[in-house]
Each structure stands twice: as C-alpha cells, then as structure tokens.
Amino acid sequence: MITIIADKLQKYLLPVANKIGSNRYLLAIKDAFLISLPFTMFGSIILALVNIPFLNKLIAEDTIAAIQAAAAPIQNVTFNVIAVIVVLGIGYSLGKYYKSNPIYTAISSLIGFLMVTPTTTLFEENVVTGVYELNNLGTMAIFSGIIMAILYRNLSMGRGEKSGN
Image (cartoon, rainbow, N blue to C red; front, side, top):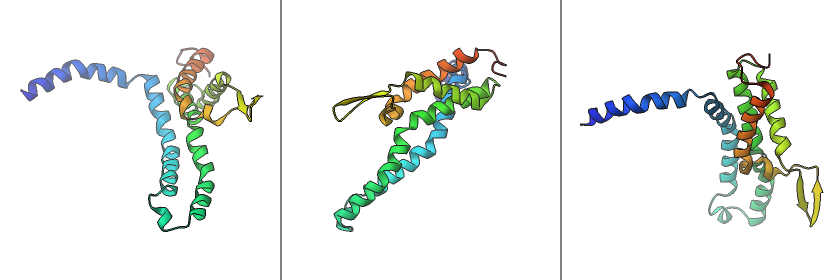
C-alpha cells in the first residue's frame, strides 16, 4: 500500500517539484537567503548572548546594560539591513543565471529597490526627507526587495540569455 502511494506521488508530484526546483527566480531567492544566513546567525547569536535568562544574578544590572548597548549596533546591522543583503544576493544570482555581469545586476537590483524605498521619516515630531530609515531596509522590506530585485533585473536587462554583456 505504501509503495503504491509512493509511486503515485513520484509519478505526479515529482515532475511538478522538479519544475519548481529549476525555476531561476526561486533559485535566486534561495541563493540570496543563503547569502544572508551568516549575517542572520551572527545577529541571533549576539542577541541570545546578551539576553541570557538569569544573567542578572551573575552580573550587575549596569554591566548587563552596557553589554546590551555595545551589542545593539551589531543587531541593527545584521537585522535592519537584511533586505539589502537579500536584494544584492538575488541580483547577483540572476546575473549568473542569465550569463550577464553579476556585480552589475546586483547593484542595479539594489538601486531599483532603493528607488521605491521611502526616504521620509518622522524624527522628534519633524518630517525629515532624503534619509533611509533602517527599518525600511530590514526584515519588513524583504518582500518588496525580492519583487524589486526581480522586476528591475528584467526591466533593465531584458529576458534574453545574453542580455547585459
């Protein structure tokens, strides 16, 4: 009975899974997230180390606060610019898949992403323009970054195999 089910699954689902698994855009997204993985892991390890439960019983509160303040920039860089890393990774991977210059496609994808990223923020009840807020480059912007990296690559370089050379 199990072999019959396995044979049916292989017969009908395997071709679909192979087709999905060979999609250039999905492979580029996979590659981009693999590129971002070390940054995410490093930030997660730092976050876990500075927030160990019951650490206040071993170290004074002011020392813990100083350690957390020192680790805050590391967490900001690793988590709040992850969309930039993903966009660069998608652009680079698509450049390799389409046999064009991967550095050019990565930078072009980043520029396309930054063109649609808001540059206006509120600071102390004043509207400030011309700046990128880190929150707009982090995890909340990954989905728009993925879309813009793919769209900008296709719009700026065409869909041909040799475009961009």
